[in-house]
Amino acid sequence: MGGGDGSGAAKVVATEEYNGYELRATPQNAGNGWRVAGTVVKEIGCEEHTYDFIRADTYPSQDDAATVSLQKARQLVDERGDALFGS
Image (tube, rainbow, N blue to C red; front, side, top):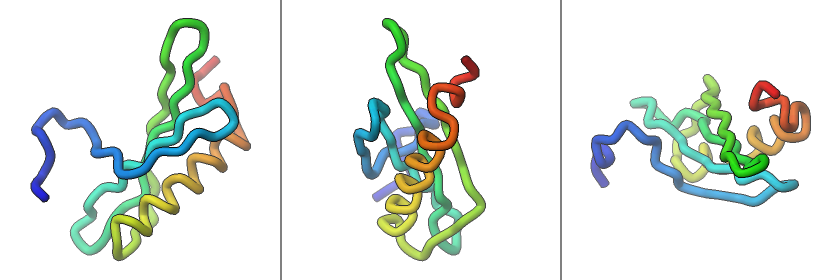
C-alpha cells in the first residue's frame, strides 16, 4: 500500500465501540516500526467531538501498534471520559 490519499488524514486500521465512545486506531509509520496513535470520538448533543493522541511507543507490526492504540484509547476513556474534549 502507498502513502495515503494525500489528505493528511490518518488511516484508520481498527475501530471499537467502548462505553459510548468510538475508538479508532491510526498507527503511524515510524520508519523502524509503527507508532501508537488513535482517535477517541463521541457525539455529544448533535456535535461530534474528537481527541487525537500519539504515543512514543513503537511496535514492529502495524497490527500490534493498532492493538495497543485501542488499549491506550480505552485507558484514556476510563481515566478522563468526556474531559478529553475540554468540557
